[in-house]
Image 1 (cartoon, rainbow, N blue to C red):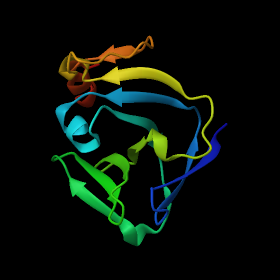
Image 2 (cartoon, one colour):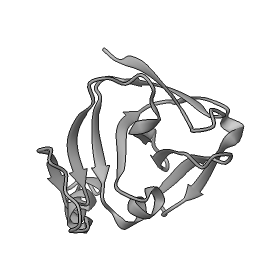
Image 3 (cartoon, rainbow, N blue to C red):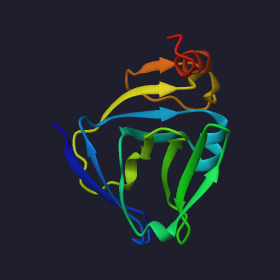
Image 4 (cartoon, rainbow, N blue to C red):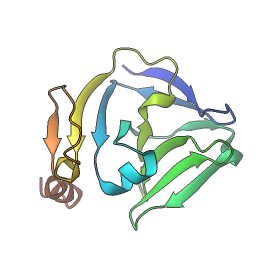
Length: 139
């Protein structure tokens, strides 16, 4: 059973409505995510359609051959990371107003994490090699 959650960018011109079956979230420590979000990017995974109000205010940046990042072109709030050619979205966890009981379950690109910080939570940790193997269907 999934629950519909609602979130918005800082200025409110973009609103998302997303069904989540669970509220497990992860942090990505890759350099691209850290540059984009000024720290680890914390996201909730969603596979399927997104309901976006204010789509005209969403800008996409092609950050790689396989992914794009979306943000509000008015206030700059980060909205999601999307794997091109799929319905796989990694939505910025903190844009949601009504999510309760988040569970911090995973950290990806853990081998790219700077040594100056660490989370206290016990999480499943995946390296760059682990992620690439999963993307290639080898894991």
